[in-house]
Image (cartoon, rainbow, N blue to C red; front, side, top):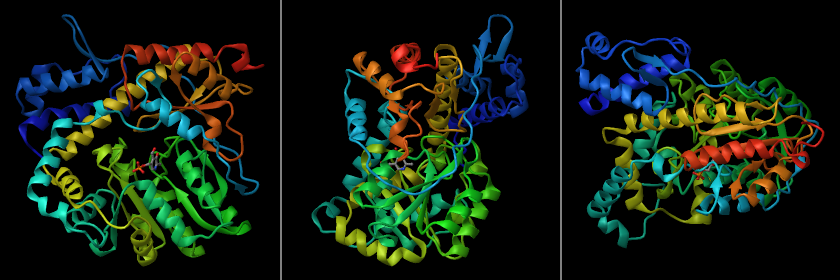
Length: 481
Ligand SMILES: Cc1ncc(COP(=O)(O)O)c(C=O)c1O
């Protein structure tokens, strides 16, 4: 833990934010005055003022003239959350449309307000900190730019990754960590190592459409496992699927799955590790969002329960540290050697000086407080966005309440058509991701995913309200409204 004075206020803000989100401090409740809290915590009043300002920016508390500080009240009604997704009948060949590419194009287009992609916007990252790390790395490691690198990644970065894995309860061996260009590259390499065309891969339902695109490109079949919006993939349903279907790999995001934002309880993570070990099936665990989870214990990876090498852990720094540096990693357990060979064959080697920059960013003081800041900023947006959904979307709409991250899954009333909503939004220069992108089954046509990592200002709030209004239109709501 860094104890520099400039992060003390963030730690205090973080503690209070935790108490507010867990309900320990109720909406509308008065909180300690600046003087009281400074005395309780043994810090200066200036530190408490800064902490309170951070919480005000995050809309978690509000100052009332001459009365003090209060936990901000939630405006409007609280929408219900979706139910567990249905039982799988069979695996499906994957034929995803070009929607992913379309949605991504619009996420980059300044003409659009985009809720389509799950990419974090520039405003969420400390540019100056990243720039300094890159220039330091370019300066210190300039020789690395003119020699051809070989191997699995710089020792500094692999060490930093191993150290970060400790926060997920995992003890990784430096020799088994392979640096990649992204989390998706890590997942692709793992799938390539353990499957062949025509094989069945079990995954969450709904699932990240990037996974479906990979499966399609590798001619793999998807078996969608029922997933609870809070508890994640059902281990019972997976166990049944392993009994009845020729599943060759399981692909899961146990912490803050995309798009549901679910987090598996620790006992289920342990069961999952035991299940795949018993059945000899590899689990490809994507931990890309773990550092964004608000609860420390839920950052624990399934890999931490694995003592047989069946869990292949894949991550990257695209969502948490520096999206533009393109650095990911994998420790493929008992499949480390084939995965390392495949990486060498398919995308060659590494960009050492960028790896040094990421290692620097991961190890310098301030990393923890940068994560905390990121978690608090996105939590405030997600709270606001849920309120807007409650106020503006048709009655009967359900929305997830994830413990971190910036993705919401919105279930419109049955019979609604997210493709019609998508087209109606496009005409108003707003982009959303229709639910059909997240499954091979077509069963999420009445759902949409909202990515809230991008710009979040009054125009974005108004655009989200507008999405809600458009969802009432007869061609979108069908018989639902
Ligand atoms: C679950 C999940 N894994 C991987 C990725 C992609 O990460 P990267 O850019 O590091 O490949 C995303 C991006 O949305 C994601 O949601």
